[in-house]
Image (cartoon, rainbow, N blue to C red; front, side, top):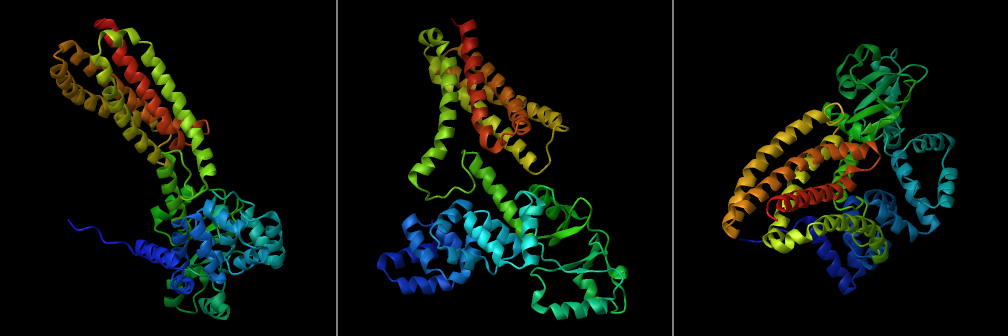
Length: 452
C-alpha cells in the first residue's frame, strides 16, 4: 500500500525546516511572503522555540497582528514577550475591534495603555465596550463596526449612503441593521433586498423582522448553536434594553467551534486547548503534574481496595489474572456514556430536565451489553481455568460494573458541571476511579463470599 500523500502544511513545514537547516534566510523570507497569516501561524505552532523565533523575526511586520490572532494563546504570549513595544503598537493598527480586544488582553499593561491612547475617542469607546464583557460571551466576541439605517428612509438613500462609505463598509457585510433614533434594534435589511427592490421603497417595506438579536451576555457556545441552527452569516448583538451594540460574523463563530472541539479533545488528557506543543519543559511538567497527582491518588484508592482482599488473592491466584478484564470493560463502557453526556452538555442537549431519560437509556444499553459480554468472558474464563465458579463470578462482576459504569457516565458530567468543575477535564479521571473500584470490589468481594 502506498503512503498517504503529504499535506500542503506538512510539505511547507518540511521545506521551511530544510531552508533553516541550510541557512538560506532570504529563501525562507520569500516562502513566508507567499503564505497567508493563518498558514504562517500553523508553521509557527509546528516549530520548536529556537526555529520559531527565527521565523517570527523574518515575518513581514504588517502581518504580525493577524498572525498573533491565529496562533494559540500560549504561543501568542511567547511571541509577544519577544516583541518591542513599538512592534506591538504597529501590530494593532489595522485590526478590527473584536480582534484588537482579543490581542490587547494578553499585552503588557503599559502597551495596552499606549494602544488605548493611540485610538480616537469613538474607537476607544467601542473597544472599551467590547472589553467590558467576558471573552466567552457574545459581547466579548462581537465587532462594534456595523452599518445601521433608519426604517423611514428609502432604499435609494441607503444605496447612496453605502457608495459614500466605500471601503468603510465592514468586511463580511451581508445585511444592514435597522434601528430607531435611540439605536434600538428593529430588524435587518438584506443586501439582496436592497439591490432588487424598487429604490423608492422605504427600508420599513423591505426589512425583515425574523432575525432575533443575540443578547450580549449570551455564552459563545450558545451563539455558535444559534448560527448553526439558522445558517447565519452574521447576527446583531444587543444590550438588555434592546440597543444595538455590534454584530457577530460566522468567522468568529468558526473560531469558537474550533476552540470548543480542541477543548473537548485536549481536556480528556487533562490538557488545555492552548497547550504549546513546544512549551518549555518545566512549564509543561508543572501543568501536567497536577493531573498525574490526581490520577496517582485514585490509583492508590483502587490499590487499597485490592489490598483488602489480599488473602483471597493468595488462595485463588486466577483472580489476579482476571481482575484487569473486569476493570477494563467497565472503563470502556463508562467512557462511551461519559463522552456522549459531555457532548450533550457542550451542545446544550443535556440538562437536569432530561438527564433521567439519558440515564435510563444508558442503563438499558449497559445492561444488555453486560449480559452479552458477561457470557462471553465467563465462557472463556471457565475454559481457561477449568472452573465454573470463577466463570460465574467474573460474569456477575462484569454485569455489575458495566451497569454501574453506565449510570456513572451519564450522571457524573452534570454533577461536575453543577459544582463548577469542567467535565471534559475531570470526568475521565473520576470515571476510571469509579469503574476500577467497583470492578475490583464486586469481583473480589463475590470471590471472598463464595470461593474462600
